[in-house]
Image 1: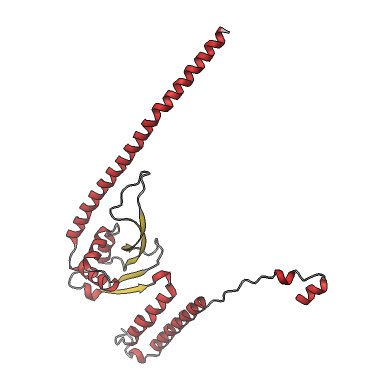
Image 2: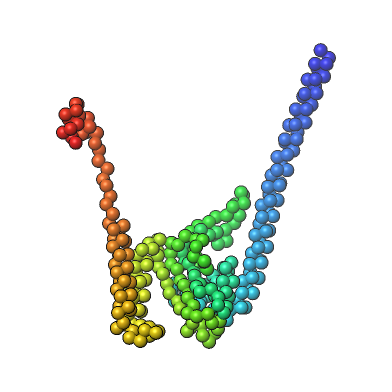
Length: 268
């Protein structure tokens, strides 16, 4: 009996110790969580400082070539030049611009302008460490293969392998907008070809080695095929927009009256 009392006493002491540990662990856990949030907040502040330094370094690099791109983007998308400049120097793909300017560099430079899930400005950190986010319009540099295209694409194309300088940027670089708002790519491509590309081709005077220009049969065949392709795009778009929607029909009233094989044959 005495040994049983000792065991029970020992069990009670063990349980008391465990309960005491659990009680004392709770404030420690809470303190650790608070410290984690504080550290996370400090990390965000440090990253923000680094981003500010990087932006100012990039701003110092902007020359007449960059200003030409910024001006075209502002006109095409409908933003002011300060907004475009801020977006460009904040972009993590900023180095692609220098690769585009370099001799024999990138043949194209793409920008998307569309809704992107972003952190709200001046958003405070939630207790769980997350932040408030919402869909906002954003202009950003892209390779064109990693993000879904749902808005407008502004593009710059090189016409040669020459180094792009402040004096030749307006001659060597071509600019265009491909608008696919709401992800309507067929309509955007149809408009781009019919309203911009084809009129430009038909007004083209210099066709390089083809001296006859628009009178040349091969040039005429080419323009005919482009026109035909645009017609196919238009038909495809209309077929998709005017697709047949089958109405749901309640067949219970018909099936309930079928009693024997001859009724089924008549229904068929």
